[in-house]
Image (cartoon, rainbow, N blue to C red):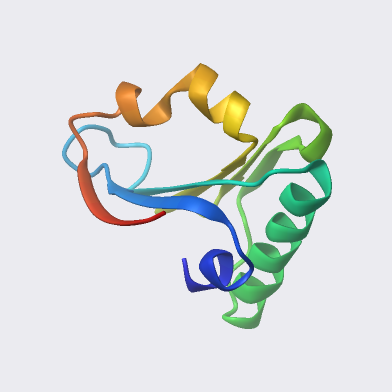
Length: 104
């Protein structure tokens, strides 16, 4: 989360989804205003996790699609355009999850 906040991700939200799904323990959701910023944030997350010896199980989407999903097994990172985030409304979909922290 520090990587994203330090790189000016917008409306960063960490959800504890352990009680509502088995696919992950946490969802980290943030917004980025441009394709270039989405790509940069995704690269920063990948590099930061790589430095800690952690590699993603899978990465889906692309900056130009408006959504990059990075699966790190226990945590899934969603980096989205604000419009894409509003459309898919992950916060609403996972409303029973506990909010750990939100940085707007």
